Image (cartoon, rainbow, N blue to C red; front, side):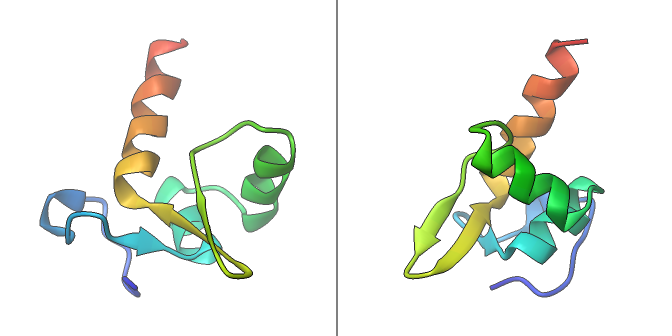
Length: 71
């Protein structure tokens, strides 16, 4: 799991995943915002690994691109 957050994901391992806290920091939103989006079926795609929720960096980047296009 990636522990540091960088604005440049080009050096991240392909398929690398972040925890909810890491994903929130990566996107610049609160953990509760991600939780709310997830329960409403909105926000970036995520995976469940047992009880853990993880977000692939590629899915976060895709979500950011889609958000830009909606404006």
